[in-house]
Length: 465
Ligand SMILES: *Cc1c(COP(=O)(O)O)cnc(C)c1O
Image (cartoon, rainbow, N blue to C red; front, top):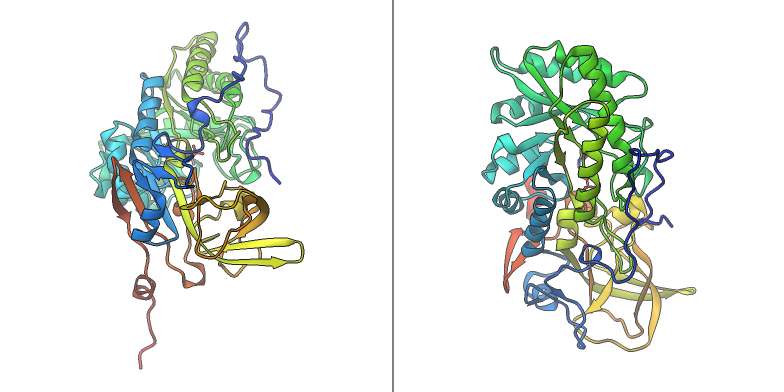
């Protein structure tokens, strides 16, 4: 089983900056950044109930049905604020692909963050929430012509170029006498991230332009040749679910060295550096998260030194956390439909599964599931919690300790469910996707309603008779 807390060692993490050091992780009591439940959740009541923002999850399950996604607005906003406090000089961009809706885009806008979008859909949802286009950053390894045109029409602040073809393609769409600010996504050659599918800092994956193989410098030269493009900086994104600051620090001298070559070759000083996202969270009790304050401290120190070492001023830093802002704000609630013994195993089947949370099947992720709504027997047994979809791989967690008397009708809840679950949800087996209910100060409101069969039929075109 993949250990999702492990950050693979970066390519031999080099002496970062002479004389500097990475502070060892504090041991002892876990900090708030490592919490699995949101700060407004009360997960330890004697009756087995969990409340979030003053609301009982079992009441929410009654009211809105299951499966259900509950999103703690206060937790999301607190996390936005923690990042802005930790990095007052940086731009913090929420990576909307982790989960986006108009309500979430409005919270991001109100909290003063920037927003990463990577499709026309994300761009339009954000725009529909009144999100200012100049605070948007458009990403994508294969942006469509429609997406590029829309980004220009809306006035998106930054477009991150990911390949050479895009340079001329974008330049041709920019109106005469206009200039579009762009960053170039490069591959710094630093390996980080919890699973192969989400490691993006090395040359054997599809994102970005390799520094090592010269592709980055070639693209930079082409961008500088385009009068309608304004190259404002470099971007890298090392991977996801990174729980140590070391890979980020390892990338800094490589980015600084590239910025110095751009200055030497073209006489251009690039004012911005976007270090991407990938800040890891704790999915299960005892796991560690990347602490934003610690990240900020170490990165700011090393950034200034790495750039000073090549005779450049410290650039404007941009960071793009997705999961770290929204993951811990979400809780998934399922109802148990079946408890079945097969051989030595006990399967507990719930009314959701790989459709609303494909992460276990994709990455071997293991959500922490617990019985809620009643105390349950004191004795426990190890069960396999499975979904209801027609794949043997639809396993939410293979080894969950649940009270011995777990039975149909019970509710199970999984914390840290806010990122890359509903955003990746599918309608496999023609089952509509669950609703997302935002909670705040004892009040609940639906921000994405449950998908019905009527929704599915609405895009199904019948044969004429
Ligand atoms: C996905 C992504 C992020 C956010 O990743 P998280 O793991 O959610 O922090 C940030 N930047 C880019 C370019 C991304 O593709």
